[in-house]
Image (cartoon, rainbow, N blue to C red):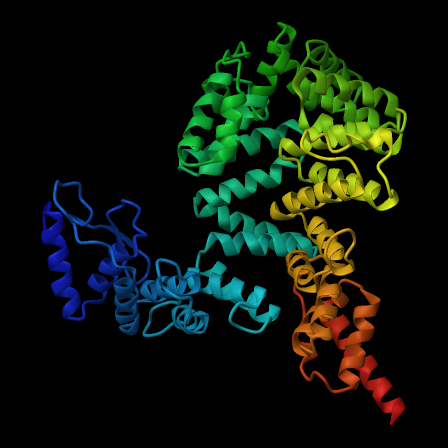
Length: 580
């Protein structure tokens, strides 16, 4: 008891660990694992946190070196005594490897199973349930089995794991069960977990209305106050652009700095681009955040009438697309408010007035180099809507939006280059600078090299269609060296994100290698989304008896997948009976 010296504390824990004390073994394992990140914390068997006195305390003495191999041994000892959290951390260590430790996925799955199951009155570890579900979903160390994945996601969510609760909220939303989706969303928020607040804010940000914006900002702010790095960056963005709150460059700087200090590269980039630090609003920010939405609306109108540009924009959003709303937006746009210009551009697009849309987005790009404006201008020039068709200008705007992090723009830029590289044998003069890259030489091969580069950038940021297109390029050898293995890698990335054609093509790759069970799993996922050839191939495989358990390979991404897989089996049985 008391404030012990670090070395003395470690010796006492070692003595307790040698006497088979599971908590001491786990505490020492955490020390040697290096996962404590400076926090003097240990976790009980049920995950309860306790302050660990002395361990890692700042004293001028030489502590024993950390030993990851010893950490694994101590995790195993504590885990063998039934310590669920030790079992879970051991499984993570074995899954990840590193620090001169080899990965051992088979053993990791064994420990995950032990940690996930309730025993001796101790509930299964919710984090272990979540990781086991993830392994079943992605086929890591176990056969792909989406029903098992769904089962363990449910077990994890019931145990309080916010990640699983958020997953189920998204899943039930995708299959149209809004009541269950809302139920799991509320349960995740009740946990007061920053990840839950952050995720909820992200879902609100897609809605273009002021009430959703206020709520999104409030939830980002909650997560940020809890130390969530991405939320801190988003709060900075909200203050920077005036989304859900008043534009305040000082506050934006503060939150960007907090996120940047934690290693967020995007926050560092935004911070470096932030030139003007003055506060635009005439209202007190802290006072605004404490008001109800109704009071906020009243203050917004008052500020707008006094000439506050940001307030004009917010009032315009509140009033919607009627005459009054657009009038306030136009007043803000006349004062070079970039977001107001973008909203007016969207309204013009809905009304089919592409010429007016191009005018608004051109001003937004000229005033603020806005990524949304750049992307929309790329679309207009790419299709000749409201402007003359000009692939060079389309590529220019796509590239500007892509460099600002717009995934759709990165993909479209790659497609523009790919299309021109495919259609030309020599680079025409009007496309000689299409890539806008100083080091790029002219010609279709150079365009294709740039297209591959931007496909990869979009794919690495999670854009499934970009991954699929890369797979096609390597599979067909289109201006790149034909490589089926590389094609399969990119197909896999897209397939895991639910891309139907990628799932089918990946199944073909496995089928050609005579890996029939894997082929059947991916055919089933593709068939579950309506791919007819995948359904036919499943029937043929069943008829030829190359697989015997197709019915297990169902995807929970679509509720009707079980019915489709069953239909495939019935069709195959019918074919088989007819042929007999």
